Every structure is written in structure tokens, then in C-alpha cells.
Length: 337
Image 1: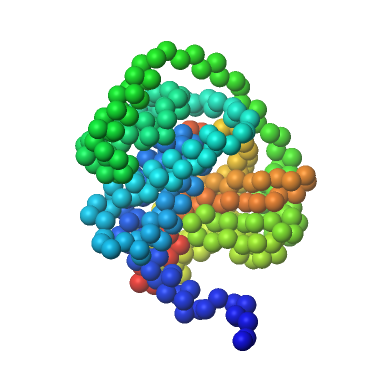
Image 2: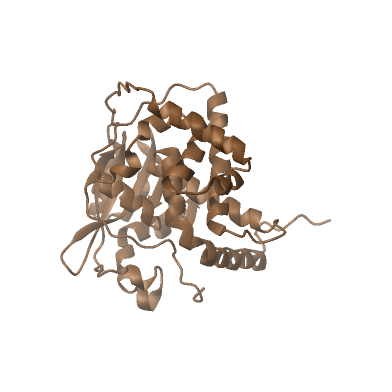
């Protein structure tokens, strides 16, 4: 019996890709609300984006096993997100770990979302999900019970307990955030602004992981060099010609100029971010991508580039008070792939 081939079946991969694109045609319109729901649960833009991505992936896989289509796609996505988050919250609660530092809330006009955020962490996973679905998304008791796969009575009890806890006085006694030294990220930023692709690649470990979140992932510095790293540095040229070349929906070009992006470091929520600024024909230089890096010694072990994540880009830039423009969720246009 011959061993299975080393390469995946191209036809299978193409079929999965087409199915995924069709799935997003139906479910992507709910993405902004899904991100907002995940943001309330996790209280972190990064964790919210991760939960949002994982929810869509889980929903895509689960859909194939359902006997009937979900009658309410929005409520069903909330259910998938709730189950994922509750499972993770329970796992985190049962695992011994040092207490994470409490984050400072940055001044932000979105007070309605952040109000009571510190208090929400004191609720159990069921209480928090029930309260967010009721008070923020205004679901009925029946809809909440269906979303959380419980009874109306249990939903009422969770809401009652949660509201009671929110009335209790809290003295947060927050600690100042400790932002790590940039180190190798300074060198990465300098190489990026010098448009030196070789220096950028040399700053990555040989087995580094480079991901364009929601689009692609590359393993190894050399594999990432002419793909993800080149796109981060020179992608504006393709963006400016997206009507002819694709890459993003032309609606999101928004006057971008074919000039390489400029990168700068910014501290945000206890870490250093790499922000990519793009030039536009109206004279505005705006952030269109945010990158997180994991450093090991004097090298970068992973990069996560958030480009096709409009909700997260808007969230982070508003907290930092920076101009931004977004690129949509997709690196393809339906019907062109």
C-alpha cells in the first residue's frame, strides 16, 4: 500500500476554499456585531478578534453537520462565540496561573461600551454572556436561553445574579501598565522604513511564523520574505490598483497612493505595536494595518499582521487617537477567484 501523498489534494483545497467564500457571503454581514459581542466578553481587542475568527471557523465546520440551516444566523454566531468563550473561561479558571494585570481603560468616546467593563470581569461566564445579550444586544429572554442553550428560568437567574454583582462597590486599585522595551522591534521598524527587505527577514528566527490574520500564514523567515513581508512593505502599490489587480475590494481603496507604508512603534495595553501608515490622495496619512510581534532574545519569533480586520483596526486606533482607514475583511472579491 503506497503512502499518502505529501501534498494536499488540490481539488479538495479548491472546494473548501469555494465553500468558505460562500459561507462568508452569508455570514460576513454579521461580523461587526460579532466582533462587538466578542469585545464585550473578552474586554480586549486582540482576544475579541481571535474569538471572532475562531467563531467563524467553528461555525463553518459545524454548519456541515447541521440537519437544517440556523433560522437566525446572527443568534447562531452568538451561540458559537458564547460556547467557545465559556469553555475557555472555565479552562482558564481551572488552570493555575499568575493573575494578569488589570488594564487601564484609555480615554475613549465609546463610554457606553466600556462603562462597567471592569465590573463585568467579576461575573461568571454565564452571567456575563446573559447580561451582554440582554442589556447590549437587547435579545429577549427566550432568544438568550436559545443562544446559551439553557432555559428561560436559568437565564432569569443568571441576569438577576449578574445585576446584583454589578451593584456592589468595587475598588479596582489598578496597577500601572508596564510596557516592555521595544529592542528588536526598533530595528524592525528602522529596516521597514528603510525599505530593506533583507534586514527585515534577518530579524526573524529561521522558523518564525508570519500571519496575515484571516488571510494567510507562512512558516519560516524565507517563506515569509517575498509574500507577507513584501506585502506589508510594498502592498500599497497593489492596493492602489485593486480595481485592475484585485487584492481588496475596490471600495476600500479610499485614495491610497502607491507609496510604501511607513511604520512606527506605539505602546498599547502593555505591549508595543507596529503601526503601518499609508499615504492617500487627500493628504491624509492613516493607519491601515496593525502588527503584533513575539520576541525571543534578539529575534522575532512571530508576526501577526492585522490588515483584513476592520473592527480591530478601528478599535485600536480610536483608543490611541490615531487616523485610520480600513480594508474590508477579504483579500478576494466574490466571483473573481
